[in-house]
Length: 298
Image: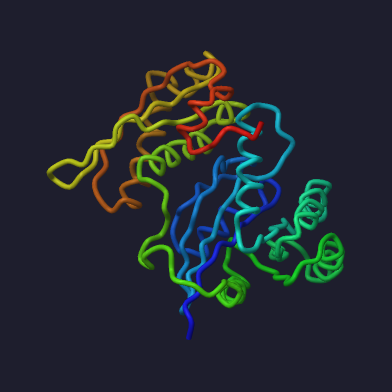
């Protein structure tokens, strides 16, 4: 049987479950997941071996109406991921349905003329009698080559989706070793795991106004790793919230992130966090590049 390898971009509105789908298909936590929308900020590659095929899954930021330079770069990253892939999976939250955002994304995907599949997610949250009418409505939005109903949270329908993806990949050699999970550098992974805890432990605009950069990632002789990371916040008041009373909040963020990183890296982790106020970091090209984003097209 011929070897196959190709890219499948997961694209959709915020909170459709793109990162959950990537993590569930690959069996590893590659993209951070929180209950809040717009968590993913850059493209994340997941490597999924399936028979003779290697499926390169690309998790993309949710597509929304951008305001800041950061927002524009995130949306640009999503569309670039779709354009560069062999096929795009439009992931739709079944409970939210055919929203204006979904309709707009489907229209642009259709206009691009690239192969697109419809993946209706969170089907466990919708009564069965409503699934077929919703699927028919969505299927009319664009020329989808295939349609799948899945639950990324519990795994329903994912084997069928993975098998279909493997068969659809173009013939060619594998681009990565099959035991690799991602091309994400450990430094960036560490920053993302810290940022996930900021999303989980703070509220309102605080997590959206913060970014994390790994300043130092040192392998130690005993096999452990020492990580120093800086959390930049756009507002001075957010610094106090993140640090917390007598440093309680930042210690909790560090403890949860350290435990997560220890499991992911499979080695002891010594994590040191610092919080700095940097007004308008989300408008700085250098900060965007540091978190894995190219500046938006001119």
